[in-house]
Image 1: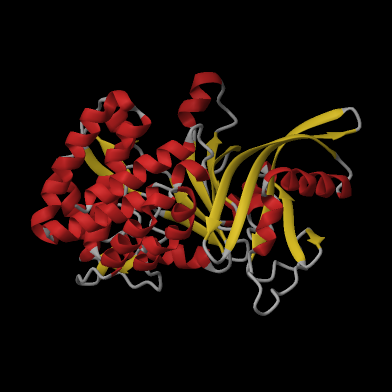
Image 2 (image 1 turned 30 degrees about the horizontal axis):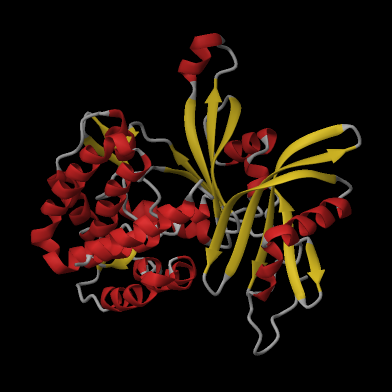
Length: 407
């Protein structure tokens, strides 16, 4: 069990053990205690929740005898006491938790969600579709959530017929009691917003099963040259959220708060620190009506068919917030497509501008500029989190976009 932080001491001081060669020593020792040898480890992503936790994810090779195994290893430091069943290395007064995917102590439902027999048993309990189960992990945020894609095929068919007979579900694995909360959010929203249907909830394990929705994401449509929704249709979607009457204890304003990224950006882009401080203060001071919003509306959350919005994903953070924040987040995420795919910069920029023009009369020019800038501040942390090549340069570019958006 991890120690409670000493009074007056940085609760995340143990994060220094995740830097450089020290991190490899932590992984080597954890592997040794687990009866394996660490052959190699490459940092794959970094997840920093300011003041709360720091997590590093590694693609690693472990050896047991003559066998080599490709695995994900996670090293985690938390400001709060770690779960009782965590594997913890004590480094003096510091505690570092280490685990191998899928054995996340914060997500007890993850291991069963990636186990074929356990998923089949779960679907039977939830009255899910019968058939053979196929699994693919689509997303994993250590300690917080994971998404597992489930295909269910009729064992009586083979080849192409088997693929055609498959049904697609998604299992979302969450910490604590959030599975029940998320299922309730979906049930409330489905009367006005096209969110996935809840198949069932395994409350104790923290798993929600959703029926898959067809369609390409808005991002895929931009990148693939597919028809795009009329910008007015996206504004109408925001109005549908606002009219939903959604009740939630989630606070989208806290998620959108740019000040939580300032320590990181001040460290890596120190020349912009003062300007970012001033900008963040103005963004936090935005005054707008509180209405139900998505909370993280962007191009990867919207499903399309023939250019029409047919589905909305990942409403985990939906609750009372500012419509303009959703608008700014959507605009900035559309623009950043041109950073990831430079050959699409014109298409992405033009469509983002059209979306901004649709929202502007409703939310106001200056509030939209500030909300877009706030989204760029958050996006500036993404290249480091994903450990993209040249992330330092791209961080600076995105910080410059944030400052320019608010001018």
